[in-house]
Image (cartoon, rainbow, N blue to C red; front, top):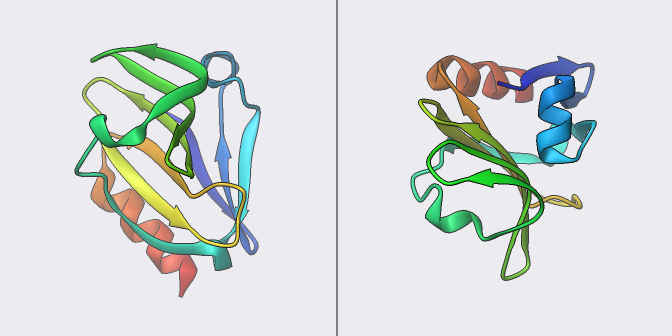
Length: 115
């Protein structure tokens, strides 16, 4: 699972080498001011769109950039993880969807940093 870190005024998605290869990204850095909401992604994986580029094995892993009708999400999710959606505005990304084994704690940590 990618590591979500708050560094000053930025939210950073740190990826291991394996996660970087699967998602074709090194890391994602967005200002906390761009985060509009954080919650469980209910329509996952149906609602994320087409992978472009990245890795996907249905039911096992979804990783990379996903596009759907003008929406651009970075996704890294593996089986048995709960998808957490970080909605963004004023950013190249519309959102970040990260799989988590402890989604409530991740959501609370991000929301606390935003305040």
